[in-house]
Amino acid sequence: MPTRQRLKELMISELMLDMTADEIGDDTPLFGPAGVGLDSVDALQLVVMIEKHFGFKMADQDQAKRILHSVNTIAQAVDQKAAA
Image (cartoon, rainbow, N blue to C red; front, side):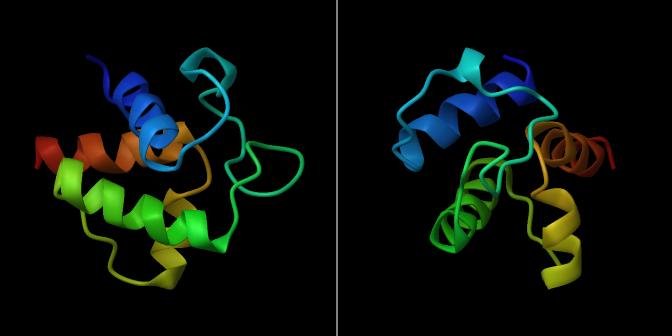
């Protein structure tokens, strides 16, 4: 399964989102009213989920802000780590 699809499905199950994977666009912002609508609690759960399922740890808050922007930015970071 492609990383993007796996991320979407994990987000729905672990963050208990009331939507389907198809409703989450690859470039849709994850936070804020114009996007998926995640909040700071969701951000924490998202970081834990990424570490648990992909073994990817974020170095600091600035890196986390960049990576957690969208499904695409998370998938790129996870895939780059896996390729290294």
